Length: 163
Image (cartoon, rainbow, N blue to C red; front, side):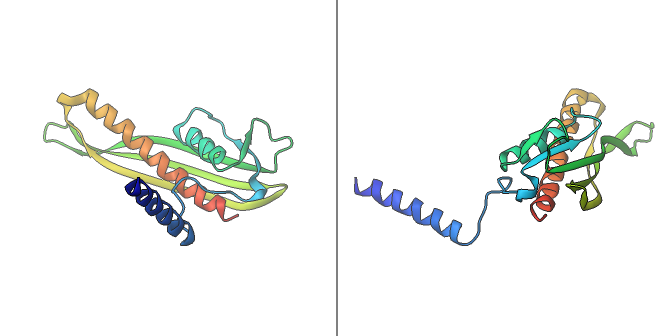
């Protein structure tokens, strides 16, 4: 019983210390009141970035609406693209290394004012490719793309929290 209390007390002290120093778990942030009701204006609602951004906003207390009518803010995603480029090829002209990229361009409008001018962010990561492991490498490419999208969402969320 005494050990249980000691563990509980230690956990509470650790939590209080973290809260006192301003520690906040990554991805769980509060957004300003100006974004309380937000519409995400994009041409493709099925991208990894859109899906992750919407989830991040909702987790941060923002109500993401399906129409700009009545929304306090509009996040305009002008560009949301991903893909891969060949970096190196073998002597037999077979790709041996690829570069996965994810690029977004967005702006934020609060009311009729542009709160954040057009921002362009691009991330990329290289990976090696072996023709005898095609299925595994396709999964690796998709995992890299998803990780890049998540990093972009974190960067955008940080900028949005400063509005």
